Length: 351
Ligand SMILES: [Zn+2]
Ligand SMILES: [Zn+2]
Image (tube, rainbow, N blue to C red; front, top):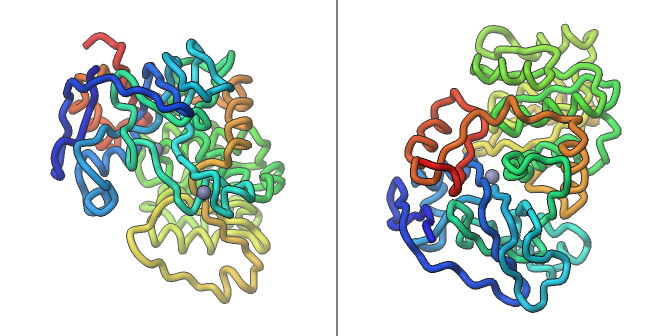
């Protein structure tokens, strides 16, 4: 089969021919219909400092946001059968550590990531633990199914650990409108936020945020976003801030635009330590700052399935490009350009 692999510890990737992998007894073999490109994949492709330290071994196949048909299952697999159309949860949990056994597999102490620690999905076929195969069901376009994983990041951030009861009727801010931020705009809109305020310096992405249902767009390069959020919320600030940018200055601003008693969920990864005014912006406001990673397994997948299959969130404005696997160089350049939403690679598309 063809697979897009890192063949050397250096920038780039190679489309090579490798044997079809055999699923183990608790694994499934999936024929890839669509695999979308994530920021993580771009880091691996560019071979930045993070990737150099994080990727354990090459050669390896990368790519993790994937949907496709189950082609074969191992002898212990019960919950999916060949022919099923599945999307992949990319957090591979051990199932045994105390974190896993108390229902938080997505932050497993021995967590592995598909396409980072294991061979991934930019290929014609991929092997997954059967536990990680989520049956997509009716109502979700097969091309859209590959974005269920990053969409789930947006869902998990929006609901937080409190169940998202603070979204409906309240002002919500989304900082950073890459694909997950754009999904979060649509999700919080559909959960009944009073106002969804999107903060994003890139005009192309602000336009997509508007298509996803943002009520107010703020360009933080042109105006003070803290003042703009207060002006739009009768001086109260935002009950919920979803931080998707990882930008240190934006994180600080996020705490300042947060209402008293509000909740800020942080998903964007800053490059280093971030300094915050904890006294006035967190402690005296009784603000709650919550880290968000991955998706709850599998509550988030149920929520994601409902939001997408009922059409409550239409992600079509965010899916901007599709390429066959052999045009991967163009696909990565498009992802890096700042003028794209989600870029999907499909092994079955004609070049
Ligand atoms: Zn990803
Ligand atoms: Zn574990």
